[in-house]
Amino acid sequence: MSKETDEDNLAWGGMAGIDWHFAERWSAEFAYRYVNLGDVDAGSLPGGDGVDADDYTSHDIMLSVNFRF
Image 1 (cartoon, rainbow, N blue to C red):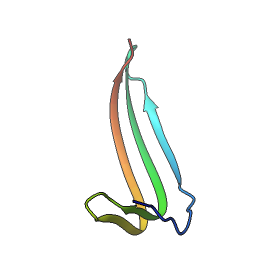
Image 2 (cartoon, one colour):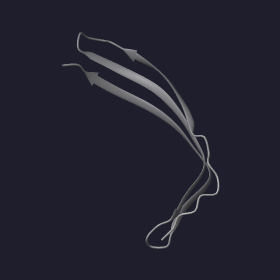
Image 3 (spheres, rainbow, N blue to C red):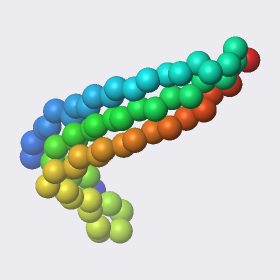
């Protein structure tokens, strides 16, 4: 089995958010993340299938509650 790659892409992303400390050990975070992987090609998998996408981008909104020990 061999894998051929025809081009390399630069993957990039950015993230921004706020962290609110509402108690001594507790905080809440709200964040937005953007990721651009460009053209994705994973080649052939053992079953003969492959993964291919023209342009992979992701927009994520994250909310978390944290407790610090």
